Amino acid sequence: MLEELRIQNFAIIDRLELTFEHGFNVITGETGAGKSIILDAVELLLGSRVDSSFVRAGAEKAVVEGVFALSPRVRGIIVPLLQEEELLDPDDPESNLLTLSREVRRNGRSSARVNGITVNADVMREIGEALVDIHGQSAHLSLFRARAHLDLLDKFADLLEVRAGLAKVVATLHEVQAQIKILVQDKEELQRRADRLRYEVEEIEAAGLSPDEETDLVAERDRLGSSEQLAELTSEVVQQLNGDENSELPSVVDTLMQVATLMSRLAKIDPRLTDDYNLAEQLSDGAQELAITLSGYADKIEFNPNRLNTLEERLELIKSLKRRYKTDTIQGVLDYAAKATAELDTLENSEERLNDLRVQEEKMLRHIGELGLRLHRGREKAGQALGKRVVQELKDLRMERTQFEVALTLTETPDGCFVEDKRYAFDATGIDKVEFMMSANPGEPLRPLAKVASGGEAARIMLSLKSVLSRADETPLLIFDEIDQGIGGRIGSVVGEKLWGLTDSHQVMVVTHMPQLAGYADRHYHVKKLVKGERTSTQVTPLDDDQQRVHELAAMLGADGEAGLQSARDILETARSRKYQLRHPDEAPQQKSLL
Image (cartoon, rainbow, N blue to C red; front, side):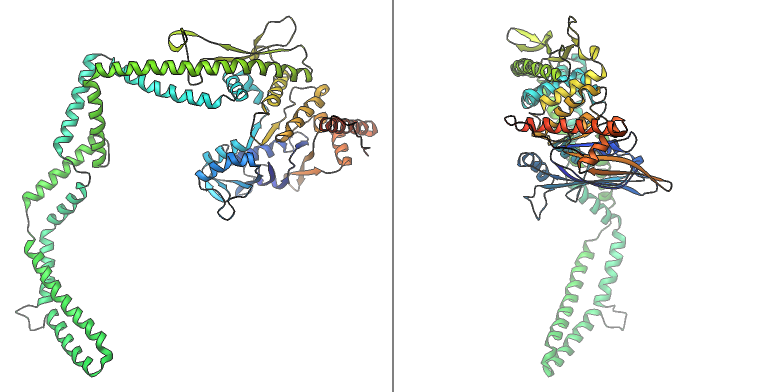
């Protein structure tokens, strides 16, 4: 669950710190006060796209931070993600707290952190999806997309793992079919392709490339190209070490030998200089050794134009091959040759290879058919159960005469997967086309949801689906932004009860304008806009006592005076009584007098 939320310099929010309850958290306030901005901040925290307009005017950056308490079940989902990215707190790897933070700068740059460690937005998004499900104001529009229906049904039926397995088989099939397509192309084109590959392989093989040779060739070329300078410098060093016959100055070697002799005499007089004598001996010996080594090196230095030309030609060949095969390394050229050899082998044995691929294709089509049929049967059973449960939920939401069914459609096609004695069209999700069907009025036939549902009906259907699916949904926090949109006050209390009922297995946060819904809150927050000087900011106040809540509900009703306050008290008492009754079905409801 989300325990703490801290927002700074975000839109019209200056600084905000909120703590939330485990159960039903409701946020209310006038339009434009900043209710949905709080949810925008949460979405940013969970990895949504960055927009520099989020930064409050006059500020350099916006910061959002959230602290989540993980239940054992949720921790089992999150911890593998954290371990993969090395994000567990090293000082307390068993901690059940997780801190997410997001920072957006005025220049549009952003950073994301998990437990204080910087991560990319994709990692933040993956973690966020496991923690929070945000249902925005227009989310019910997803009900009008048939693909969303398939996802909802498979989630309800717990078929996502089987579907993922089928998707892998379909992906492999597409690779096999791509190879088949190549092999059945025009034979002349295949022959031209084979000839070109054969030429390329022979060209690379003839070059006799070694993966590491380029470095050695460049070094040798540089030495040969600088041979005159090398000889001159080496000769000068040797001359300094051994001395010049025409010079009266002693050589470096002779001088160091004299120094060593003198140090020997000093050490005999004062043994404390023995180490210094040894050092002098080492310097003398080292100078003699260096002179001998460099004399030998000088004898081997030669200017060899022919060898230099050979090296230049070899390096130019390597450069040409790298350019032709679009790589920066010799290994890249060799890898291209290996790939070309494999393709050439396939082309030269195309008939045999084609037969093998055809066999593989049929096996996979039959395997896809088996998995597709398994998914189909699971969807049929789950669709019937889902339809019945949604209808029951809709009855509670005053849509008693509504019919709701899950339609599964199969399409036969000659090149589809094998299902028993037929062949059906398929994709990575299986063989079914799933669509929610609805009839809102008696006597009307079932039609696609998108063609018959009004905005208010779509909102209620989405709420019904959420109520049904939440039992299988492991996301700990559900957020609804104005789920009551398009729903009249007559059923506001029913909507509130449905949302509050989700708190058996979820923390729920709702932004609403409906007092009947807000009456079910376990924690009620009031948002208002403040103007100080010429700056506007958002303030959020927890309504911790009944009197505060009564006044807020009365304001939401738009009713002044005692009559409005009494209506608000009635809403709160009714919700409290109903909640107690649902929690304690065998006990008589208890009522508490409200101020």
